[in-house]
Length: 253
Image (tube, rainbow, N blue to C red; front, side, top):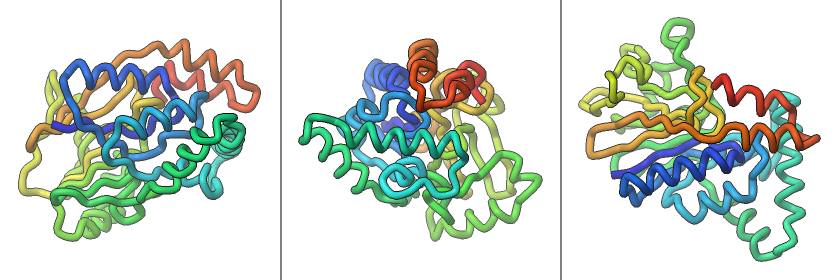
């Protein structure tokens, strides 16, 4: 049994709550699909927690942007990236500072394990391509091109859009609320791309932290309430982070 998390975005309150939920369920193995940092107020703590708990961790576009350069970021995201970089650089404990940078620099954009592909963005562009639910109607060729890139694997797990659900190669998108009262999807013989949602900044109009549990061929979508006030207050109190980044957490968008 594996828990897969993604898009924490320096939200330590949400991450700690999700990790506690994973522990309560007795799950020992955690994978992280990237964007540990960016946007939020607690980059160092989130890196430390993921480095300690995740046995497979990928590079997201914000991790890449902080380590290298935030190319093509909007002004709010870019400012948060530069602030995050400064915070990591200013860590006084040299061992902790160096370990964090070493960890970020070691993150891979794409990992295939046991016939399953793990990326942050998409099979075609693993760090920064968005696959939106609306692409089923507005850009189906993008989805089909990504299914073609899965190179013999039937299942891909991703994040990046912060919207959980399952793409099948009709193409069609199944959000968790179409999968039953306890939203679960059974992996079969068709190609699927499964978005695990976001721990730290959901954007599907549900403010609860999101992640998935994989048990053999069954994928369960989990939502967990956390204390949004704590993170939003830290963002409002930080002159380098836009208040919008805290306010959006309440609406899940």
